[in-house]
Image (cartoon, rainbow, N blue to C red; front, side):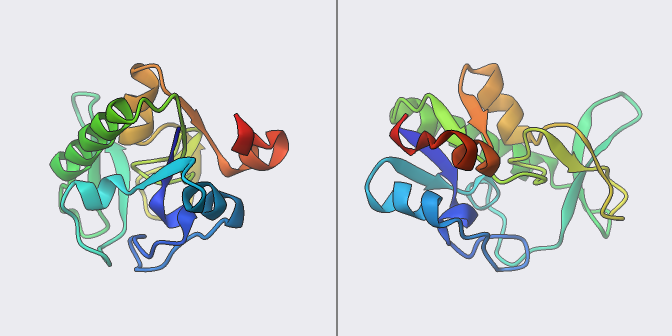
Length: 150
């Protein structure tokens, strides 16, 4: 069983109220091979919502803040924890997550300046899943390796 980012399955849950439909991901959900999750919605955030990015505070801790400076770290952490709980319930070994997100990004995230600059890094959910032994994949992995049958 896979977990997949809900936005990749065509659910309008992105910060801007849109989705990132990937037809292969939607097919995984439709055929019962994947469970869609949106950590940000699970954390209690509305759709749409203000854009958020990860910054590192003065103590070296990751914080998630909006472009307006509102700290949403607690909501992002709660969403990550709920996503992990779902993963454990369904015994998911893999998660296919939307890149660049402060929740789901597993290779690249925005740098916290809201300038569109990408840096190496992980979102809070991707990081928590990886720490708990769940392999986090990208849409590129799905296309390259035909992971639907894995």
